Length: 438
View (cartoon, rainbow, N blue to C red):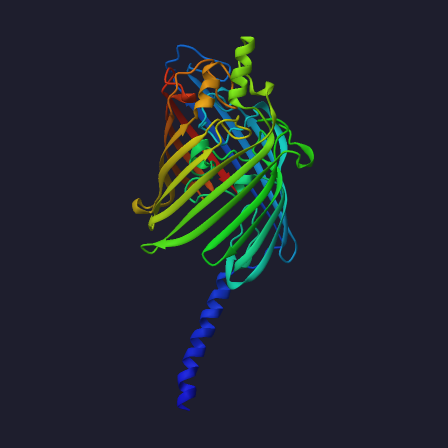
């Protein structure tokens, strides 16, 4: 009888904990529909500019807006297998038609601008999850995520059309231009030249293996037919390989992550040095398009985040790539360092609000500098000449929750040496963002 009296409370506690854990696991969804709408308006006053080129930021006072509306549809085909599709309607232009700054001020602005709304299928992909054991973890219902659960140890395979940065280079505090920072080289690692068409999406496959405190990711993705093109090459004749290792830890009882990513692009690309030498022979302007040949271009990105308190955290990204060859997909950056902080409004009674402050320094190597100085054009930059200095950007934002699922954000960016040119700028960019989710 004594033994039974001793064991019974233990069994009761164990069963109670198990029932509580099960209660925290949402019921597995068979299908889901979510949606979002985002409007970004940006404006900059006039700034100093003794000259300008084909890819320069307009030095006059200017404002532009972008809008997009996305439907996130998902269906569970069988246990572990899901399919998602994201049709999207887009309209508008980034400042100066998304040209003039390597760290462009709006990641909501595509490289393709249109005055009339148009529809595209941005994502259409399959996701297969293999549970390998460990504690069941809840998966809350969200855009492109069916509610349910998976075990702590798992393998997830994603294949189809999606963005490389849906899986790689993610960061809790700086990665979603619809909710947090807007600058390209704050929400992503500036020197990570990830595979993408002109809208930022690619065909490919990625595998993620999670065990205990670490995750290993690897993927292969289709590159554009030529740098910064609207169309992707067929048959993966030009492709990107990317691998990322993630470590999760606790520092002073607070969650943190460190990720190391390496990538290598295989494609027809031009050498800056070859382009400058070819132009010297003809007396013309260097153009990497004239000297392209099949080559590889590699780089890395270090990505860290650390929760520092109940309502705030810090982040850092450092990245670099082979600067002897032209940027292929993302932007004209060879080295980049960004640091910042994000805080919720809990301490002033606005726990759904978020504020952030970040700084980023973008740099070019010598070959890229010589190319731009001789009048060459990059993906986003090219003033016709160059008085080089690193591009330095500061961004601050405040996102206020108006109602459930609706946020209004004020954003400010100070850009010194836009397009690496100390002769132009600085530029002040003011932004207003309206975002709604259903």
